[in-house]
Image (cartoon, rainbow, N blue to C red; front, side, top):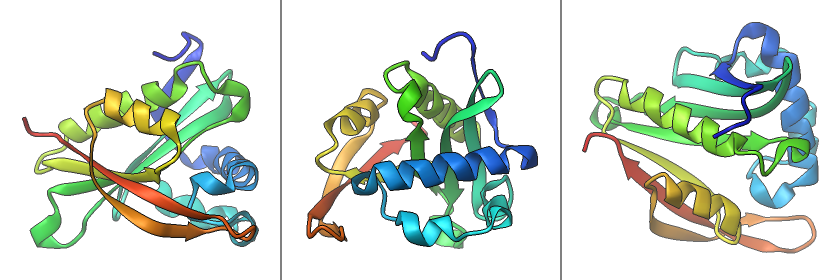
Length: 174
């Protein structure tokens, strides 16, 4: 689990500035890990991230705080259409470079799964991850996610690289 001094909790309005700063930094430093690009997202206003707070399609965004400094985040969205409301999606998992290897990603993921399991009507959760990111794939597998497919050529980077996305899911109801 995460270090004892790292707190995992739901993101609140005052966290939005730290969330945007972390997201902008992660997109710039790790373009191969995200489908969003740093240039476009950097232009977004902080208020545009209010949709990541609880409400609407977003079930929750969890943040990891180290001495009140936001160092990690994970968002979960739920399908709004009636026939697929039993499915949730994990998006935007990120941990600051300065805090990698401390169990923060695992703590965010475990807390997210626990919240999902306590949400009535949810049966499964999905995510996509850059197929070559062995550490991330291993983390998801360690928490019961299995690969159900691969989207080839899912991301095209400005430097010409083409990346596949591994599609993964985990049952929540048994």
